[in-house]
Image (cartoon, rainbow, N blue to C red; front, top):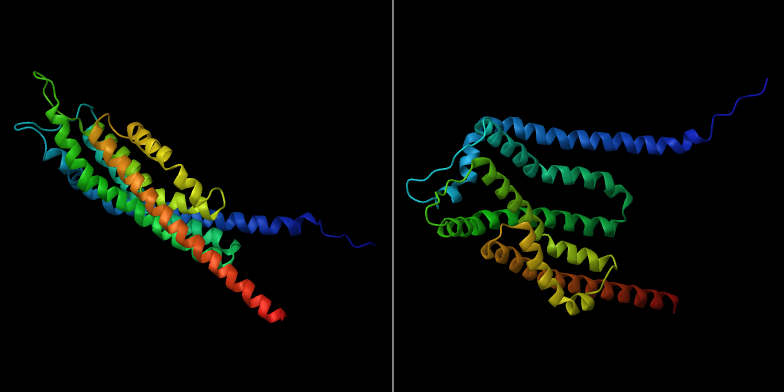
Amino acid sequence: MSKTKSPQYNKNEMPLLAHLIELRSRLIKAVLAVVILFVALIAFANEIYLILVKPLMEQLPENSEMVATGLIDPFFTPFKLVLILSFFLAVPVILHQVWSFVAPGLYTRERKTSRAILVTSILLFYLGMVFCYYVVFPLMFQFFPSVVPEGIRYIPDMTNSLNIMIKLFFAFGLAFEVPIFTVVAVLSGATTVEKLRQSRSYVIVGAFAIGMLLTPPDMISQTLLAVPMWLLFEIGLIFASWLKSNDSRLEHSKKAAATRVSN
């Protein structure tokens, strides 16, 4: 009686199955981090909302206040804020899970570079949100009441205000990632530092165009988004140039060492 051979495709499917199981585990941990933060913060939803809109309320005209125009807005708006905040706070955990899943397939040098880029990108994203809260919001909310036409009562809606503020947080968080995008583009070989320097004028115009699209239609918030993007682009060029020069020196030293060994 002949022995039956096990199908060959099982050997090929096992690594894929293992990767899928690990991916599921990483996703569960990321979602769990968001859920834990949400459960911990939901009891303080109203207090968190008041902290968020403090820059707006401080600039309201005298005897003016915010309103809730929707039936469920007093409950749903703080609830929505806590859910979004939980995701933002869980970003380091989420990116760590992504990194842990991808890192085993990278070389040692690639791991070091990727880890540095990952940590820096998280810090820059949070720095952009802090800049938005402490610099952009006070100036922007001071500007809006000053341009209200005569005879119009300025009463911001709590849900609409939250949507605008979340949009600006996300916009400034992404804007502060410009150095990361610049460095990655150069290190990946998609472009060079020299080409980016030659395209500086287009970058400045593009920064103001992005500011116009992502911020409310006022020059203050648009400028406060565009100018940091341009400055961060310049910082990215400096770091990309430094990293490329280090790579060149390292490659030159390796070639010199190989030449000495061969001689």
